[in-house]
Image 1 (spheres, one colour):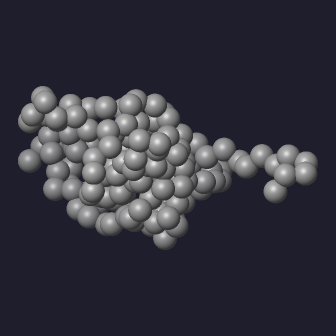
Image 2: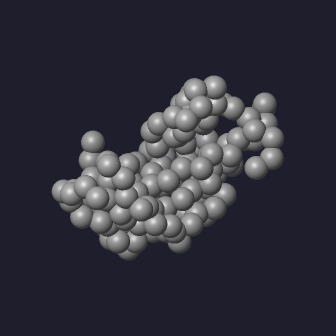
Length: 148
């Protein structure tokens, strides 16, 4: 197996921000999502990343065309801190002194917004799937006078 720089990230570590049914394929764009489920798993390693913990997320996106379910994996590897930070900021976690606490207990049921793109399956060019291109930061709710 290949040698890698960096270290594996633990489930409770703090990270730093850096730079089923009918299938509904979403056009590329920004969508609101809800985390249907989260499970802890293990990534076995590849040519690009070492073996490490992995979070498997099931996102639900409801649109007028129907519901899309997307599975996303987040590797707990120090070179992927930027992506983990994007995700936690997307579900409303706050940055404190340049760090974000990975609070996994709040993940199931959390909501956020993400940029979704279409990718082509590596093994079958005729198959396309949706993928999270970017997790968007959660915007604070804006209250208007007289509206609840």
